[in-house]
Image 1 (tube, rainbow, N blue to C red):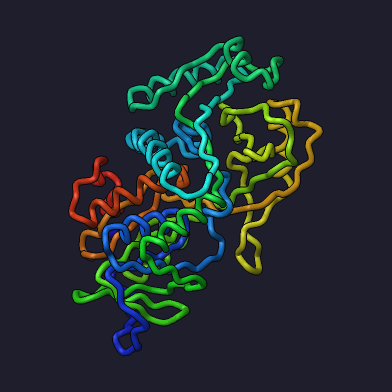
Image 2: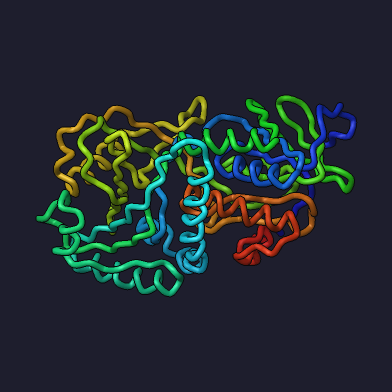
Length: 393
């Protein structure tokens, strides 16, 4: 069962640092959205953030509307369940559009559309099948031939492009400015943000839950666990077993060049995403693996991924060959089973989980809104039944 016997941690004799209506564990983009939305509704909210190995500050900022090709390559057994939640993605991007309009600063939100490039007839046939699924799920996508693809994106390598799948509702945002702006919104709405605070365990209580951390013990009527890849260990302290995994991935950014790319570019059969930032720099990623350092368990880049990622990018977009890579880095992607884990723990009332599924940055504001709606007694506009933690029973 997903609910095991608690680990035996007892905090009843510990002094309480402070009490809040709601404590959000995790200060990444999901936790910050939760804190902002809850504080806006009048809740006394504290957000406890460890600050290490944060995925929100390390991701590439892609806003994915269509299915990423790596899902079918790496997790074929999970794709059917993942497809049942595809309609979340256009809704999530609509939420990003609203958020961008509400924030005080430009977060470089842009929907320039997305192109998933096929090199072979087999790739193109696979994209046609994918497009059929997506359109049934409310995601607008269209298969283009080689000529139409190159007319839309003349910077692509004409010698290898067989066609593409075009999704108009795809784009990008700057994850650094987005996260910092959402943080400011949370604070201005009244949320308390406590940094450098590593939560070790949570203890369920009928009259208030206790949260033990590196800065002491806190009490709250409600707790939301939104700690990304760290959520599994916190849930385990409650006796809840959800298979949360940390997937280290790497990204690259080049020097600036003249603007030439408005689309989010992906590859149908290789791990690749490319987009051009407002600064003129190119952000290149797509899910190439990194590794954890043996000593500190921090993510670090490995040479085969760096070289392989850049080689495919240069093959697809030849004009970038002379650009210098200014920085390459690794971050953490949170994996469960490709779909989000959202909602209240059935047998532990008042304790909620908010872990977005694949493309967590894209889903962040929408997942936060769905959980806040449930916490506030409203019916979320997307059923949380199939996303419930109870599915791991």
